[in-house]
Image (cartoon, rainbow, N blue to C red; front, side, top):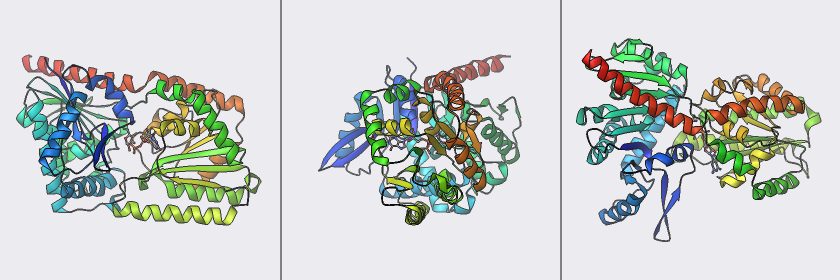
Length: 472
Ligand code: GDG
């Protein structure tokens, strides 16, 4: 029986060492939830790094055995691979380039070579498990070379690739010294998916100009085979977020937090610490808002959650300092004994707390400089059972293409952000409800399960089409 193999940099669990014992922490991320129902079926499998460096072969074996009943197969990375492949090439070369921060990109041959080697390592792990008829679904920018490596070993297998981050325009992508190799790596797939039509368009243009293959309605013909490129905007587990928001425990937490905050209105901001998320720019906009509209002093609080991320990478350390300083400066200037304009938390919270924050927020301020999709804004909408609340959303987030009922802003336009804050905080309730209802209807329908089935159906369609092309 043919099976499905999902491959991503990380497994949907995180392995942690606590007092000499190994612990598995399940990921609550959207991808793990969406694919959860399929990777555990039959012989299906998820292959990836468990998030901990383990060099001892005996311990590795113990982990392998522990993960097998969960339908997971670990790929073990060494300390230097984590540094060079993950922190280095993935997060210091590809991440900044793909988010239009190419001034932050590092071009280093050693990092590239390790990226190739580690992609090969994932390839070997897949080949060990895969039969010739299996379907393999590869995820994200850490594994761009994997589709072609797999194609060379398993020529008849079905290979899908989905990129969760943006694909930049050709003028930016071409800056990478290894641009052609990266594209050729992706072209080993049968189906290449992006969140938005624009990402797809940028990819096709780069393929055309750097590899020389044109396209027709998303179909590319290489010299030996044809593949499809398409957009699949990722949804969330809508039921999970709407149901959690209705739990008594969550409502109770909301009451307690509201009581403690001492503000009439709450603006919420949640992101991983990342320069692509526009956290510093958002803080500056909030500072200008306080300056321009003193009538909101002691009435509005910005509840800002920043989740620690990639703290071994230099640019992220610098950003943490900048955010700390900005929060300190704004609170230092505007705080009163009984009111802080910003409540800032640098940590992550359990889902129930997050849900209480979503419920409590009168406004969600989601203003990335660039984002493949952005799930936080969708989770906020799904958590609003009374339909009251306003979403301010950056036009640079993939989600803005779907959520046109949000207040859409350009995150570089600080005055526009200030005005959007004022509009959101003074919006009549009927208007809030009308916009929220439209957004909820769309997100309920185009949820994570819809996304998975759209991608899988399209992949099967590509295989059928390829066969009919081969026999015609
Ligand atoms: C990448 C792309 C694309 C956050 N804080 C806590 C917490 N979270 C969860 C949120 C949300 C997830 O983390 C963040 O997802 P985003 O989509 O907003 O951003 P990235 O992590 O950058 O994701 C992005 C995504 O991949 C999917 O393709 O949308 O563009 O960059 O689910 O809820 N979860 C918990 N506690 C927290 O404190 N439990």
